[in-house]
Image (cartoon, rainbow, N blue to C red; front, side, top):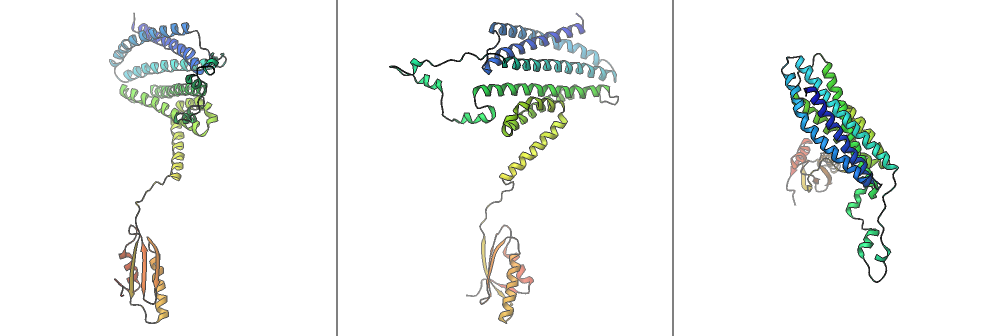
Length: 361
């Protein structure tokens, strides 16, 4: 079997296996979690088992086929080497884009299919368990509880009822998948531009894989951000989550600016509630001193002392100043972290007066 034929066979086997496995999960497990009748359990088990076997066979055969192509490309010289490698990796990204897109479509189809299915028969509590000579507390617990536990507060994010919670989980999984689909589209476009650029850098597999995982992780992270934002601030609009996640994944650069704007607004909201600078509490100090060098005339002395008080009050960290003109006494209440006795003394000496400390009795 040729290298190309082997690679096509491995890719097709892997793709069909993944699609069968996702079909089994989407039409078997997900409807059951949503409370509707799933597909025939035997059929779901057969599809899942066949899909798992095909996926394992495809995974086991793919590395050898890819390695043969890489060896041929590495043997070439630049720029042919980079052209071959860019093309081969672009084929791989395109294949992953197709598979993830089909998986998302399968999940969409399963959600639409589940919406038209009848609900599962619910277990009812037998009346004999609640009346008669015997009484079962287990039966009463099955009717319902009203304990308002801490776990129930998570309903703000994940739904107020089990059915809504399961639907939110399905929606979150769907939005995560479409976010990854959008990121693959973004990365494939970037790789396509590199392939057609005559001044591109030589192909480096380490940079390729680092960029791929980073973009996929970024898309998943942005999906979590938008899920929390929509469930917290617009709970009636959370059905837009898959659309927002897909668009953000397809245009990650614009998504980065959008998430940065959301983060700035959230930080501003927290800044309004929580102070960003915390200063250590400090006790104010009281300093009483006599002022020397005042005029002998009582009126002039009072005016000079008033000007001094106003000047000291203007100092940073001084909270209160009062004076006793009869005794030429000044009392200053100040914060030692912002002011000091030296600053008060400087204000006094600036006006041609002196500080008498301690003041005369």
